Image (tube, rainbow, N blue to C red; front, side):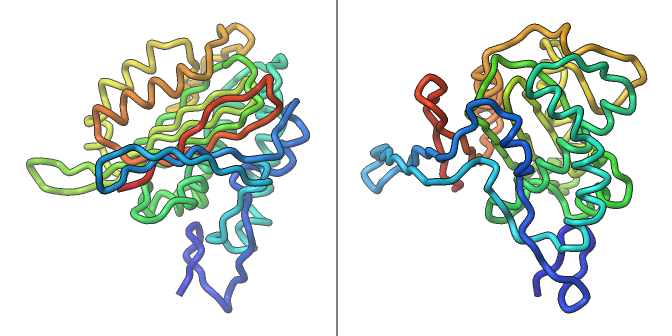
Length: 279
């Protein structure tokens, strides 16, 4: 029986509705937002040959939905306490407008990023990169879950909205305890976000080198939060490909599974995209 990933309730107690991975309203904010989705499917045949196949779908990146969230959660706290609460900050980051990132705004953006990464993960088949308890944590605590990191980057303007969700199972060699983890990327306009989430502390230790590496990059750590105010306008712009290359490095070293989506806008914004099969 299908149950809501956030509240764990099922029908007939609750009804289910489609939840957008990225809020549809954001399409009006992104200048040059695409109305077509371009995938380049990459697979390997029995002869070990790489096969590339273009897939063009008449779909906006803001049309993507999942059906694992009940209407009560979708139209209630998710809408009011996550989407609307962070709306003015997210729109300012996308357009690179002036924004003072204080304790409250950093927390709201970090919550939105964590929630969006969690919902993005529902597009992929199981196993998930986030434990069930972390979905419940987001609902009840309205903060990113434990052992979660969120970094904010300013990228060159990218109308080709991209989400990338990488999941991995980590096993402690001493205790043999296994925990899921995920590394997610969201790039809309000038806003670039990297979200790293681990089910247990062993995940933090496993990714410690990369946590330190990202800390040293030109970014703002939104979570774990601190009270020091920062200014998005003071960040230097980076090429969006820096985010892809960084996560590619982690994928290759940690042998992680990934599915990504990039979207085709007007020709001047075109970027090649790939969809990596999960093995």
